[in-house]
Amino acid sequence: MRIKGVNIGGWLLMEGYILGGRNIPESRFKRDFIKVNGENELFKFEKTFRDNYINEIDFENISRMGANTVRVPFNSRLVEKGPYLYSKEGTEYIKKALDWAEKCGLKIILDLHAAIGAQNHDWHGDSDGRALLWDVKSYRERTCVLWEFIAGSFKNHPALLGYDVLNEPVVDKSKIGALKNFYRDVIKRIRSVDSKHTIFLEGNIWAQQIDFLNDLIDDNISISIHTYCPLTYTFNFSPFLKFPGKIEGCTWDSKTIKKYLKPYYDYSKKNKVEIYVGEFGINWRSGYYGELDWLNSILKAFDEYGFGYTYWTYKAMANSVFPDGLFQHISDNKYVNRMGPVFGWENYPKFWKTEKKQLADFWRTKNFTPNAGIIKALSKHF
Image 1 (tube, rainbow, N blue to C red):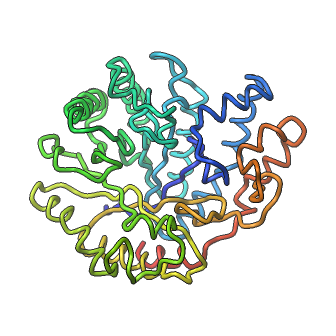
Image 2 (cartoon, rainbow, N blue to C red; image 1 turned 90 degrees about the vertical axis):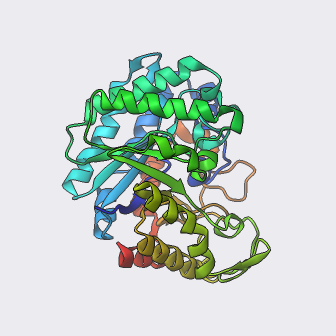
């Protein structure tokens, strides 16, 4: 089966821009929430958010598009509540995703988006600005054991496709050995309990550099890349750029995209391994800047090269930057508050005690608008 699907970002790891706010790490948001509401209320808040932001209807939506796979990013803190201590509540949400996927005829890739100690310096790794996974051996060991626990817990579920063991690791050349050794160890841990499901290994530097992975390739190993090329255009960091057109000092068109992806295709043929594009996506500007031309060009390249893929992301607040959702929250209200000075999710602590029901309703997909253009383009390729 060639993977053709969607990411459900922002659910089992909350992300600032997806929820209309600043890209602070989830752990910082939670600390700020506790200062206002206390730790017991944080537990209730997290449950309410997860119970309403994504539901079975969302998996039905993805299935109706024609997709066959959902990549589910999660935070290690969702499952690991302390060294080698695991949360029943956290695993229940993974089980829900698998059960909903099974009902809808979909497969699930579990993606560790934020490892213990953080594998990169970014908010989506739930990092405080440090990537301590590479400095603290015990964090790597705990992350490997975490994967053994997850694989042992879910290996028999019929909807499980595989394990994306580390989202977008970032290490310098001096630590590439630590990344390789981590991959070897986590493969060993998973294979000790599950020999049949695919293990996805992401390249270094936000899943772009993959040459160092050659000697890790084996049965049921897939190499995962992420691509948002060219970034200043797809993320709308430089407004008014058009595709095709002059971007980042050169002409970008369908031929440029295909040329950019060609080394990954060559790598897959040389090493006899499948390439899976775990993330790609674009900021939507009503289609006026060639967004659909870009999307169709990159999907055509994936099809020609035989790459599997999952689009980033399913659902988000409509934003002026970063790839937003197949379902967008377009209107403004006090939970979005695009005027500021406090934006999006950083408003939640203030309203939580008195407006729980209103917040729960706000998070539901019924209040999000389908992005018909993007959905139609993806569905043609699904």
